[in-house]
Image (cartoon, rainbow, N blue to C red; front, side, top):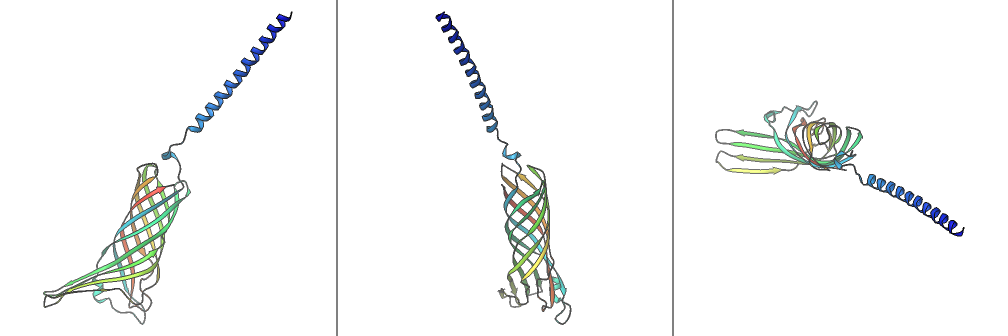
Length: 250
């Protein structure tokens, strides 16, 4: 009788051990599945980024609209009517932040240059100059981006600009074939603050998980005169060029 009870108790303990082992195994498998699920990451290229920081260089063919100032200080354009374009480089850094899906707003700070040039030549004389106007600016834009790894970018915005420099490089040859040059770095009656409107349309490509290269043509139109109210002329800068931009998506 004692032996039968012992056998029965042993069988019962064996059954409990098997049930316990089965439960432990099930729990262990569940944990393994959870761990596997946790280890599966979404590829960086498929993640939705919310912010991009970038730096860019801008080449532009710049010119101006020059008008006679109204009222007491106005004067004719004279030889300035014969001014032509000037090629310039500008630079900037900035960021763009997602508003929703493909719509972004962007800001930053940039160093903008525009200007004009002039050249006169006669039988034995010549005179030329290149005039450059420099500004520190804070472009503010709303942009639309179509595509994930490559696509199009369109943007419009406004650029507040603070005047920081004027330079005119003059060169001449006189009737005795003597050459000369001078640089003028001051001009009276400059407006210290102007606004420009800007529009962009270009393309971009992602070449790894974060880095983006973009080629973005740009048109820039100055809305206020570069010169003050006492100047004989009104001067409105114009620029047509492109940005080469390198960005990092965060």
